[in-house]
Amino acid sequence: MTTKDNGQKHLSTRKRTSRAPKKRKKSVDAREANGGLTGKQALALWELVIMGDGKTASQRSVELDRSEVKGLESARLITVEKGPRKKDPTWGSKLHVTDAGWEWANHQGLGARLSQTKAAAPVLAALLAKVGAYLEYHNLALAHLMRPRPADKEQDGVASTAVAPQTGPAPGEGAPTAPGEAAPAALEDRIRAAYLHVTGGALNQYVRLALLRAQLRDEQVEAVDAVLRGMQEKGGAVLYPIDDPQRIRPEDDAAALRVSGERRDLLCIEG
Image (cartoon, rainbow, N blue to C red; front, side, top):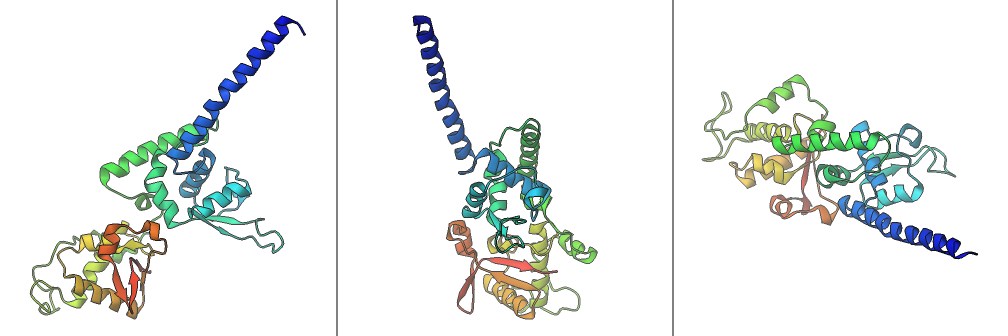
């Protein structure tokens, strides 16, 4: 081998070794920006949020291998609905975005670094930037835009009504049970209005009691708790705990209530 050949070989090796750290750095930077997800996983999760979840692999644009799906599932950002084949449950399986996945999209996902495809990633990144700026300006959650199920007209009317504190009883409802405390029926109406206000007029959504209480800050906590328990006993409303301790915030601790000695953090009004 000539000296010239040795020099070219050395130069080629040096170029390859100098590029490797940059590639690893980009991968590390993406995972840091995405909360531990690769750019491909982040793009796949955004596809589920934007285009709708509950789809099989053949119905999705972003292809994920088993390890990538497992990574999203282990992070509790998705759940996997097994396919119809018992011997191969991954065949025809469907991916569903969890509440934690929506939480990721609401916050970290809006600044995510996505896998760079020819057209989808730049367009999607621009869309996310505009959506994020809009939501932040209007103090809205992403679920208000992407996944609400509109209530019927009567309930929409309730959602659009103000949830300001009542200074007196509504016609035909009688006097409040105590000074500064609404009657149970009136308080239940206020709770429903506050719920629809938080969800943007949607039913069947999990609402943190912390957000609900912020809308009902002028009501006595004990009275609100009593009505919430009564709503669950009557049916049509369900109180849930937050199962993942990592998702519990200080405001959730302050807003939690007890039902038969068990903690509850979320309210869902069914419709």
